[in-house]
Length: 129
Image 1 (spheres, rainbow, N blue to C red):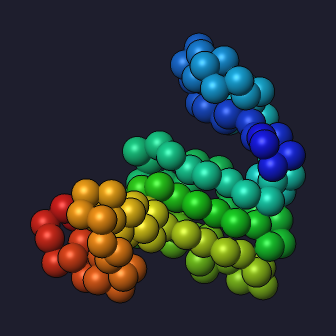
Image 2: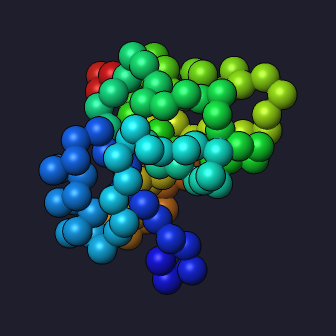
Image 3: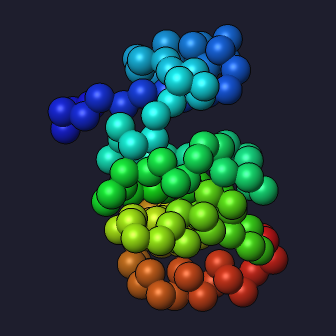
């Protein structure tokens, strides 16, 4: 919001969605009224993994999709967005977010920088899948 953006909180459940939006000072929008092509950045932060939360074919050209989920296989949203033919989309999965967070946490705890590549290797070789 400080950068001039107007984020919206989209949620399937109206009561919880409105409550979360109120806490964050955001406008609430029910998932049923969400129009993906109207957004240039979509952050997905629910536990939904096996199906995309909205029709991916409705993403606009150049949309950035950030899915906070990570696991042994891609979420449906990430897989469908990466496979969207004819659309230039930037898709960032939860592993990328977790990798950057791990590197920052390492530096916070030790005072030393951890290269992103090293953080990626550490995360991929642990059993947090």
